[in-house]
Length: 134
Length: 186
Image (tube, rainbow over all chains, first blue to last red):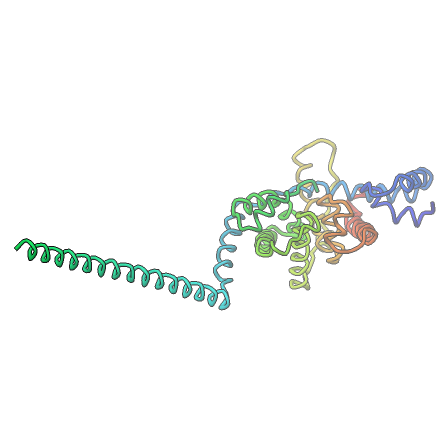
């Protein structure tokens, strides 16, 4: 392996992203090349220094902010098409309700008529009996 | 990247289950915040960015088709969001060169108060060096070096080849190294 190839692979070597064969070649080259070894050491130091910055927790209160914005956007996202669908749905429900009410009214009226018919029939029967007895 | 929400949890989120959404948020908030923090270079912008990333992700959950892991999809949103913000904020003046005038000693072995101060200062310098990177290099440096992701996942997030990730990380790391050269040689 030459210096150019070695140098180009050093970060991947540090990150353990190379195949076993390439890794072995790099290690063999680093053992014999002072310049590349020096390059490797400084890249490794940079990687190690960056390690200090890796962990950082999110601040408190983020969820509340996210939740509030989601709710706000959820309300704002109602489009005119959505509104038209809602209105159409409501109109359909009102039609269904009206039909139900009309049906109930019809049933009640029929029941009342039947009662009247039955009471009329009852009084006629009573009158007939009285005449017959007299 | 070890954290991965399972399919059932994300499916529940897609159905609008607020408890599942909260659980997913808790699962990923620190990683997304850390990514935004390193990309933005300051805590204030990072907080705004994290909020925007989650709101955007939860609003577009139905676009997630499980072709990749949920985390990868979320980090892609976060990375793109940060890059868009950086592009809008451009040109930004990074004060690294001005700070190079400040002379600091390398840390002595053992955790002394001075050591802590030096470490803090080094973190600040590292932040500035990262912030000075071009956007495409910054994204892979943050994901690969600071977040410890594998090249394959970075390639999926940044939608480029693993070879491109490898080259960009190397270029980014050399640029950061050069910015910190005086310290590293001391």
